[in-house]
Image 1 (spheres, one colour):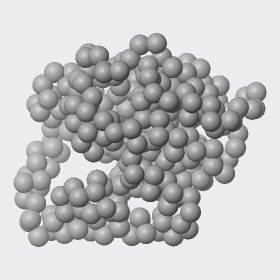
Image 2 (image 1 turned 180 degrees about the vertical axis):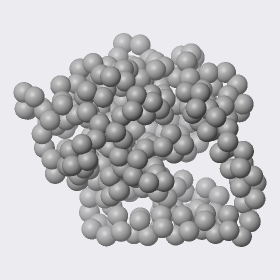
Image 3 (image 1 turned 135 degrees about the horizontal axis):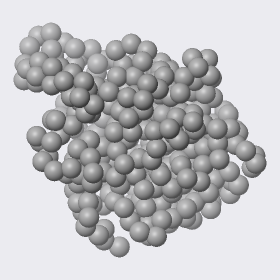
Image 4 (image 1 turned 30 degrees about the horizontal axis):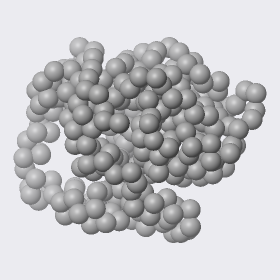
Length: 320
């Protein structure tokens, strides 16, 4: 292990050992090898420690918090406290890096002289969700131009930033204190500081979000993750097919607006634009007014996500 790794990757995790194994392996398969990986458990009680040990890689460490926080902020902050890299990246335990992710992101960050870069993500649509079928994807985190805009959602798994930016913005704030998710709050704070935040336009991350899959935390494993991880490693044309699916999904969405079949969403967009602009002018995240209206109190957004995945709301002790 390098005494001073170029980049620290942080994975926050809770009791999803079989998914965690895929995430860890996706880091170990990076074309850039000067990294450390800190896997921080939110008081895990499953085989997560054994999964990390099985990697048998001195660059990979497991830290398990003594108390369960119920969301990513505490594990990520512990990872940041221990990070030794000049740069920092995050990876959700249910997401996967393509092999060139770190190398491509760091090259773009240094070329652009940026503080923060991110990649658009390929997001696997839940099997059988609405009109989607197994094996369909969409793109997420695509901005209006080359710079970050708080009105888009950017998964933490795609972030790479300088340690100087991390130190300047400060730790992730707890979900219970926020109307929006802690990751988007952190990005908004970085943006308000005037950080140079640029997109790296090549999709190098794939997300299979547990939050979009009802009861996902009630299952020990995920055949969907197993299948996608295997395809990423063994099928050379997998990414091209996923991008093709995402392109078709995106064009279908555009046509839905063109032809008026989603008029309700169009009306919501007319409301969103002025309200979001006013919120940003006041230093408020543009999603916060809508989250407050829908979910009520701070922290209720994350509590709703937890209940959907089979976990108790924030502040309630998880079952052991």
